[in-house]
Length: 181
Ligand SMILES: CC(C)(COP(=O)(O)OP(=O)(O)OC[C@H]1O[C@@H](n2cnc3c(N)ncnc32)[C@H](O)[C@@H]1OP(=O)(O)O)[C@@H](O)C(=O)NCCC(=O)NCCS
Image (cartoon, rainbow, N blue to C red; front, side, top):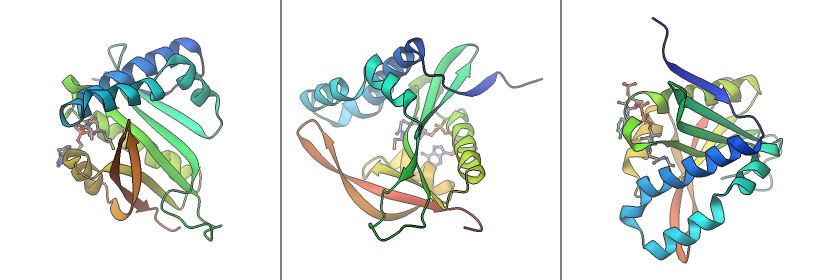
C-alpha cells in the first residue's frame, strides 16, 4: 500500500502563504509557549507570521518551503534558505550552505516519522544543489530537536543570539557536512 504522506514544494500564492502563516503560528506556540513569557511570544508571533510575510518568503528565490500533507491536511513544514552564512566568517567564499530555518510538525503528529521524511528531502535538495553543508539554529533548551538533529549527524559548531520579543536567547548552530564536499 502506498504511504498517505505527501511531501511537496510549496507554491507561491496567497492561499499557501495563509496556510503557512497559520501553521507556523500554531506550531511555534505549541512548542515554545510553555517556556516563555506571553508578551515575548505575542511580539514574536506578530513579527514572524502573516500571509504577506510568508508570501514574500515564498516569492524569494533563496527560499523553499516543503509541506508534509496527510490525507490532504498540512501537518508539518520545513523552510530552507540557500546561501546561508550561518556560522561562517566573511572569509569563507567557497562554502555553499543550505539553512533549515524552520522545521515544525503539529503536536498530534510528532513522533510519527514526518520530521525524518522532511529532513531526508531537505538533505536530498542540498546534495542535488552541490551544497557543502546544511546548517541550522536550535534553542539551547530544545532537547527533543537537538536529539533529532544529532541522529542525522548534525554537530554543534557555534552559537548565535535569537530574539524572542524582548528576550535574547542562545541558539546553538548545528552543522552537517555533506559527503565529498
Ligand atoms: C523535531 C521534530 C521536527 C522531529 O520530527 P518528528 O516527526 O517528531 O520525528 P520523527 O518521528 O520523524 O523521528 C525520526 C527519528 O528520530 C527519532 N527521534 C525523534 N525525536 C527524538 C528525540 N527527542 N530523541 C531521540 N530521537 C528522536 C525517532 O525515534 C526516529 O527514529 P527512527 O528513525 O529510529 O525511528 C518534531 O519533534 C517537532 O516538530 N518538534 C517541535 C518543533 C521543533 O522543536 N522544531 C525544531 C525547531 S529548531
